[in-house]
Image (cartoon, rainbow, N blue to C red; front, top):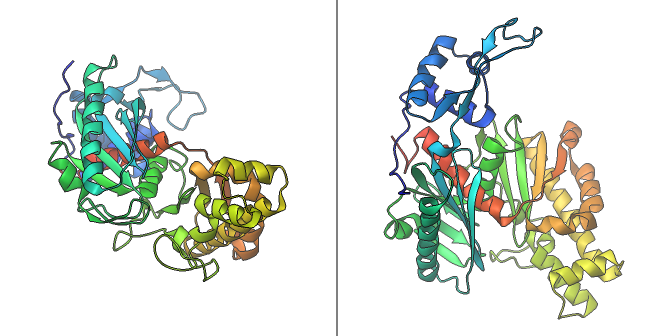
Length: 400
């Protein structure tokens, strides 16, 4: 079936945006509960919802009687509102030095299709060409899929490093070796669809905020551990972007020995000790096993090899100190530890928690540390979530 063209949401006021956001992230939810949580009158909620129902973005579920103890009214029937998932389609792609990981999702960020493709070159022109072909294949999967696909709202691209989301430019990505790459402009010349470019960890944080553990949290952080170490922050009702588009760079806090040079060119960054690449390098150095890969280093550590254990212990010490510094500064109630590096989490968890407890100030030490496994598909879903957020809010390039 042909994929319908993008169509704007019928949201004329900030109240309408707030109402749809509540339905999308917390639904199914009755009108009266939306009114209670937003402070809007029930009449204002009904007015905001009506055009969304008429245009097929939102629907009433079948009415059902509430419990007699419910605050919504004894015996009154309620019709919870829920988003129609198939009313919108979105594409998200996570870009790494070795692969493109793409997903198509519905309006609730539910994954419809997944596409993985290897990269053997990080030259920006080569990657953008491959990215365009990758996106077109995902669009074709929406057209030919058995599930009903709604209008394509946009494409989200997630890249590590310093990303100017407002202009779609990757200003500096040490992992990709990119500086000043106008991804949105270059990809937009090849694919005529609105494009949102984000820092990958921030995109993952948006997905957790709208569709994951952060839905009901007042504040939280997402810390990713892998080839790089990143941190996304949700504070005071918003994912923090920073005045200059940089925030949460936990991996570049100067908490490691100053003789270690980071991929960013600076010395003493957390990543020089705690990234998976740093742990592997340290294990190779101390064991004299230049042939080791990361699974081999993990295996050695699990077997009790002292040199391998030391590499993970050292990483845990620095990660715990970095987490404490971040929690002391911004005070989140929850830190989600995620990413491809969590496979070896048990090897440094004890040292990390002890370092965190040692350096967390006062009540900040009550912040919960939660392990949450993520795959690269989840990162791509995060890129899609940034499109959904921009679509609902009417932000560039999806402004109404």
